[in-house]
Amino acid sequence: MSITLYALDGCPWCEKVHDALEEHGIEYDTVWVDALHSDRDEVARVSNQRAVPVLVDEAHGVTMAESANILEYVERTLA
Image (cartoon, rainbow, N blue to C red):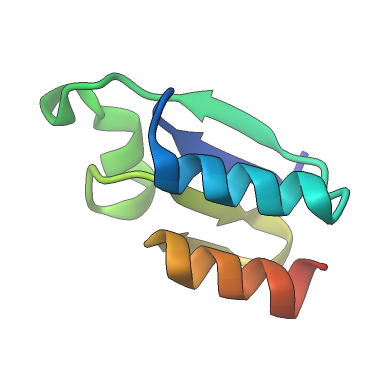
């Protein structure tokens, strides 16, 4: 799988990204992160910050945060 979504259960911005990926039939893996920012070491390792959602698209060499940016990327590049 070349697309990974780092997300927090119950996060509305993460759900919007999830819904967009599902709507376009894009296959991806989800990595569920801890609710505490201080415990999000894996997110920090891949994106240099601890906020979610974070989308990693290995095929295009893209790592991005901020749901609005991710949604635009999904529409323009992956859909």
